Length: 142
Image (cartoon, rainbow, N blue to C red):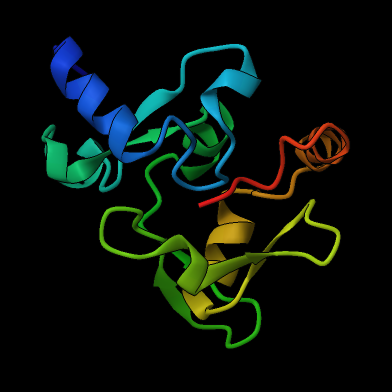
């Protein structure tokens, strides 16, 4: 697969739009110790274009777990639904924080399916969120 050049200006615009955090799990770039990746919301392997309208900031874990998925199974309705699109949908309409604020809870079929497909509550991240909570770094404030 060929590499595409991402200009510094476009990367900055994507990062600013994503508020320098993962568009899926909301982990802030300054907390992960590495630059967040640029994700193709519709993967290139599925016809997604390399343009601003299809790009968001994403942590390496969410990007890896998402892979080339466009859909996932909602565990409550057993229906296949689209994975959350951070450029077309609002995070808080599909997700909320658990009472303890350490887990992401899907509020809609899209939210529930995305939580599972992207493993938004993998154990190490939940433990890390708990640590961030103790120092006031989590949950992110919109």
